[in-house]
Length: 290
Image (cartoon, rainbow, N blue to C red):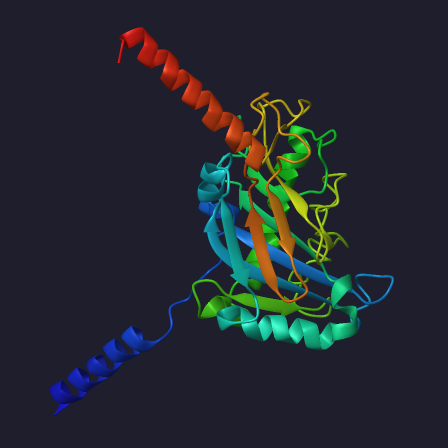
């Protein structure tokens, strides 16, 4: 009887382990290859700490930093996410209901990804971020390393909303919720959108705005040196630079669709390329006598 009882208990435990949803933690900087994270925030009042009129949201996009870096420079690269459905839907609807449809346009967003695993080496601190600038201003290695404090925000939200049950989930928070869960008040400060006051670039913009995408990393072990700031985009005119029309764009519509898109050559550029290839082919034929 005792043996049968133990076997039954073991069988029940196995079934529960198999059927229970796995904890699907958000991959942050401590993983060494953080996932792209969409952050939303709405300030209903003058202060981000007033509580009752502010709200933020964290959406795990499930796309790794290294995969995004590998896609840099690929003409026509595009990815999109519908925040109104699946594991995102409940959090998106809660945000819209709180803000009210009339104020949806006042929601601000950014996209980030972290790697904090080797902060004391050249290139050890790596971060992806939106930023609506064509030229990133002064950014020292020390401040870039300070971005690691955003890990507290990720850790605080793990296990909340659908992050606990879905591979790519979402959650919402108010300033009055658990510490560090609200995007506008991380680490005891009232900033999350400017990486805890570590950058002069405001990485958030209102819905409907196209933002550029940047890769920031430490350039050396020197705290005084400038960080390496690499814009995402496609060098369409092959001049070695990313110009105004060559940036990868990140946008979030009021309908809840997030899109990351790299530029493609204009039709006349393709025509010139094809013409050049045609001339090259003719020259080869003449030389070979074909």
